Image (cartoon, rainbow, N blue to C red; front, top):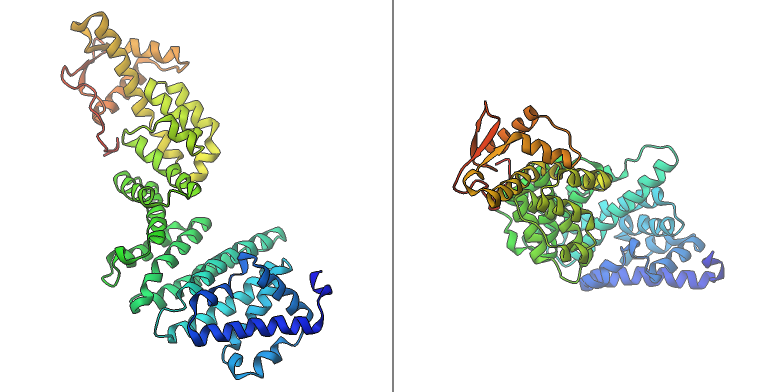
Length: 415
């Protein structure tokens, strides 16, 4: 281990240096220096060397308790040093348990500080308690134990949210905490818990959305947009995800890709197709055949694309959205038949025999009988994807002579 090359005196010096930095940052309200003292997941050389020093020097408790400058923050510092040591050693469960004690003690101090000078440090703590909880849960799961630390981190973050809500200049931190809560809830599959926090942000008079930092607004809109996708509220999902895309830092290509991964299915559902260059640029080629299927009216291609990337689409929570695009593909297929008939005999273009549609589907290796096709055509008419009616006896769809295939114009099929 690295600390074997460190003298006891050097270990003492490094711990004292850390404690002095902590004390100085608090007394001078130096938020920038203060936040770096909690950033375990940053793997900074300074904290890694501190971990080695704590492992070698076993009397850090005495150093803290014998000084008035440090002892008043002992509830923060003592578990924090243990957490730093355990994190370096890869013992993430113990690192989390110690860091949770630090975090709870910190929030008590934070409540008493009148200004928001330590807000950046709170951000680091909120971020790292989530990261540590995830690592701890992986460790617990690997040993056959119940992973429960991320749920505990969520409870702590709700406590932090309460400490920020309506507290003057501190309230701008509420959205960052909310976004970290969303990450936890999405990870745990408990997205229904997002609702109460969303209500607090969007209906409470104490919050003005525009006063929050752009970074947090983008993240918030991304997650709430995803929630709207789950709820099949596509107009709202389109607005929120489009907001996130528009305001996302253009240098953050990975974040843009994440937004597009969910925005593209929403756009497809309201009849807006992305160009291939966009899919190539952001490595989203899993959507290319879906777009092509919509353009061609190729049901087989759509189903193959869904099958090929089923796991990926399921993980993203967009599979059901994409599956419902079948209706648009049927519409496009009938439209192509209509165009071909119009070229041959304009006077009969609006009369499409169900048997012709059956044959077109058979060519695509999709076996359907006339009754099944009639049912699909009825749905298209009901959903306003097609204007017309049935001549039931002759098994013909009689299309409207004016605008037989209405465009979605930004509205979802199921509206």
